[in-house]
Amino acid sequence: MIEKKNQLEKSVASSKAGRLKAHQFMSRDVMAIQEGYSIKTAIEILKVHKISGAPVIKPTGELIGIISSYDLLIQASVNDLHSSIKFNTNVFSITEEMTLKEIIILLYKKKFRRLPVVNSYNKVTGIVSRIDVLSKILKS
Image 1: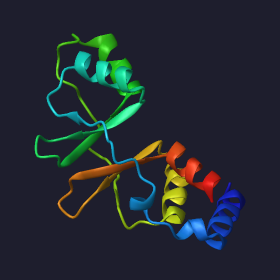
Image 2: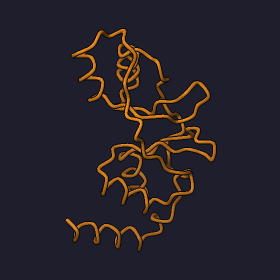
Image 3: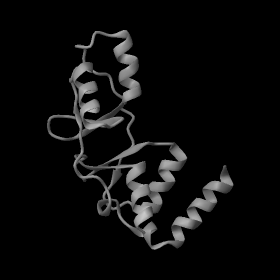
Image 4: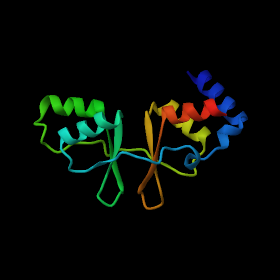
């Protein structure tokens, strides 16, 4: 496992793509879920947009959590669908200036599927998913 991580870091560090910043390849059209949404509404949003998770934000756009389809599966099986969502508030976010190399290492080490991108006011400006990273690597 450590050897794979070291190979990954060396490979990305030696490529020009590794120096790209998140704002250069992040998805800007972020489907976020507002705190207080019902389980049913959150499921519908993920289904319609064909995504497996989303950042949870305050009405001001400030990041306060993240929720996945797995979280909603558990909640839907034990709660009324009109109940408010419960979400993970221990969310890891990145900035627009973080490099592709740093993001790949985070995705690998922490096994994240997506990372919300926030500005200095903690407002969501984008999202970087594994597929965004893979697409950027393919284009490099």
